[in-house]
Length: 64
Image: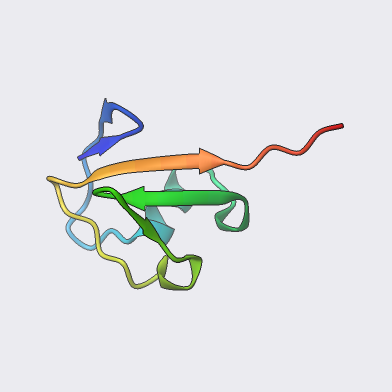
């Protein structure tokens, strides 16, 4: 799969949530797009990933 333009190998049972946890992202502070479609945060734990997926992860950053 590709994540933010980089090749990444996923395990057969990987979900969006497990991917985020594995990569150190706080699921409450990111937006995830899978194959051009936004994944609702409520579906992170159910959305299964596949080797041919294209994932974009956007981290929310606060500042002032």
